[in-house]
Amino acid sequence: MTALGFGRHLHDAGAFQELLREELVDVLRPSLALNGISQIRKMAALAETYYVAVAPHHNGGPIATAASLHLAASLPNFFIQQIPLPAAEEDRRMRAELAGISVERVTAGFAGLPTGAGLGITVNEDALEKYKERPA
Image (cartoon, rainbow, N blue to C red; front, side, top):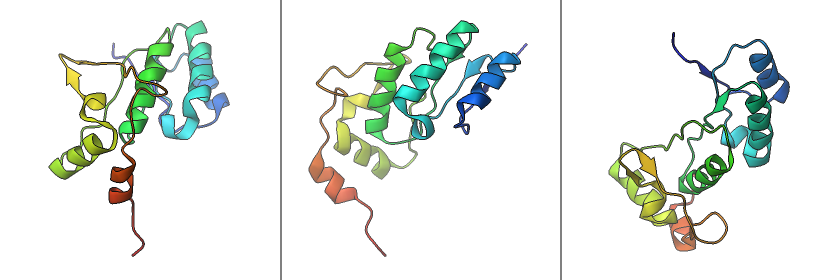
């Protein structure tokens, strides 16, 4: 049997509840970008009553990675965390400049929880300015 994870494109809490009630999902995968931290915590609490694990999905930048790691650490039914790995060297360099190299560093399959104030990272505002999208 293969475990199934769903939910990365769902925003409606009722849709998540239906997946759980019908026992159609083994791992709930709500999107951090669509649902936010508070909503995912509510979904995880609901999933916990069904003995379902939660693996929040995120494909954002390093600031979202820091938020995802803190969210993961707060969920008793947390399963696994996705950390985007950009293929291009310039993308990896930009991510490291924005929030420091350690936030997305994985060692032996594990990522450390950022320990500074707030999300645990210091955002480099000069890098934000340097990499912001410019009008065409």
